[in-house]
Each structure stands twice: as structure tokens, then as C-alpha cells.
Image (cartoon, rainbow, N blue to C red; front, side, top):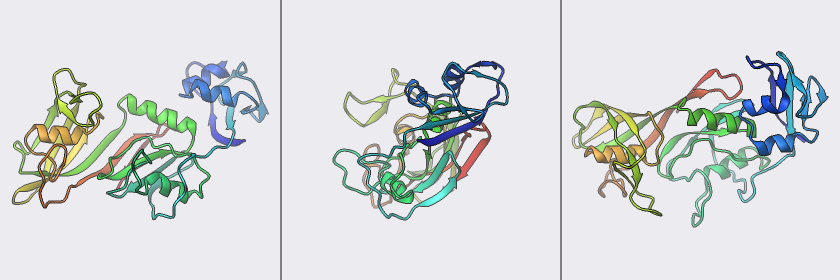
Length: 275
């Protein structure tokens, strides 16, 4: 058994039963079922999910050890930006997929992370970047942290900042794009701005002007697939050499996640990670 979580109980709803408290932390039904067989420790003693939890109680969660199957460890240089017991944040290089996929033979970030931990690890990336996008990827080091981080992301508590090289110089040089995004058609990876799409909001600011291109700081206020690429193309300034939303050129495609902030899955303290 592997300890994946430890917390000092607190909250307005205490006392309550262990099952309800674990669900309130964001644990999945599957994880609670796995942990209840001798894996829930309350103040040093094994208990069932019916045990009563009081303010200040120490809860430890254990589950069977596991590793990611089908992701062999590889000795690939890995730039670690932040690490604690619950989170690993790394700087993903360009031209590297985040995780293995069908038809892809390139080494992935997942392979590099498995190599970093010697193969004894479950790869759980909370955010993902396209192969050609570089920058910050946040990885949960246990199931509870993964659930809490995913929950806070869905609630809009994450902030993400990017640098993007775009064709031309946007006018105005600072604005908010509020335009819904949807797939072009079922099965197609390409997206488009469309009235029946999901709301998407992007804030941009020109930070450096060149002859026929500009570097923009972009902040995502929502998290749709290809959001930056779709929105910048929508206003007439696609990312340079974007094969889906722009035009081919000799310029280098450049999109980089430079900053992410979010509440820590255990302490709720604001974590700011910069690349």
C-alpha cells in the first residue's frame, strides 16, 4: 500500500462521516472504494467510511501502488519548475507531445516524467499542451491531488498566460476577444468561431512589434481547445506558420505557456509557476 494523501480535517460541516468528508475533498467514488479496504487511517488507526470525523483529526489515505502502463521511462532531460508532495510542474519543450497517442512515435513528456521517477509513477497531467506548444505542464502526483486540481480548473480558478508570435500587428494593441468556439465538424480537430459554440474569452496585449509580426501576451479566461489559435485567426492575426489557422511561411511557429496560477490541492494556497 502507498500513502497518497494526509490531511488535518477542518471545515464548517464537521463532524461528519468519513465517506462524506472524503467526497467533499474531491475524491472519486472509485478511489474511496479502493481506499476503504484497510486504506483509511484516522488518528493512527484503521477505520471504515462510517467513522466520524472531527475538527483537527488526522486522516491518511493509502491505496495499492500503481504505475502508468504503456509509458516506458526514458532518460530525457526534464526542466522542473516546481515540485512538492502533491504537484510536479515542468517545462515542456516544443515538438514534444504531452503523452503517447495512436500513430505517434515521438518521445513524450510522459516518458520523460516516468524516467525522472524511475518508472514507479502514474502520469496524471492536469493541463495539456499541443506538441508544438512549449511551456508549463502541471502533473498531479496522486489521485486526490488530481481530483482537486481538475475540480479547481473546471471552476475557473486557474489563470494561464502565454506568449504568441502572430502575423501582423493587431489593432487595437490590447483587447478582449469574446467569441464562442466549436468544432468545424464531427471528427475534425479544427475549431472555428461559431454562434452555437461554447463561450471562449481571450485577453491579448502586444508586447513587441516587428516588421510584419508581433509578440503578444495572451491570457486565457476560458480553456477551449486551440482557443488562442482560433481567436487570433478570427481577428485576422493568426499565429505565424500555423498550419491549421494561418498560412505557411518561413517564420517559426511560437506559442509558449509562460505562467500558471491555481489553488494548491491540499492547502488552497495560491501557487504561481513561471517558465
